[in-house]
Image (tube, rainbow, N blue to C red; front, side, top):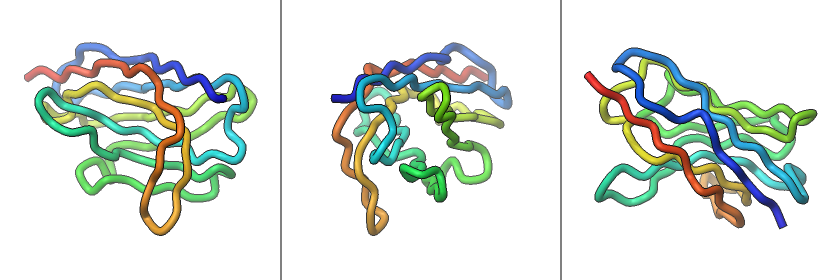
Length: 121
């Protein structure tokens, strides 16, 4: 079992930065790939970023590439999502997930409860 708790969401203006955190407990990182997803109002949950279980590789949705960075701190059992140059369309509930990543497909085994990010003009 893995428990995931997100934090760091909030209300920001377009162009601002925000860092989300996802604290893991239980079996923690190994051997899970950690990911961030987001769900905007009235839309499906979509993939944002993933980092491999050993931190050796990352992948991003095209919409956030170059603006968002995923990272992990093994000592703190925490995954981060640094979000820069935020846009109105980044407004969503952001979810952390622990799961499997292969062949550009992610399967989440565990989800956090989500944290709201709202970007205003």
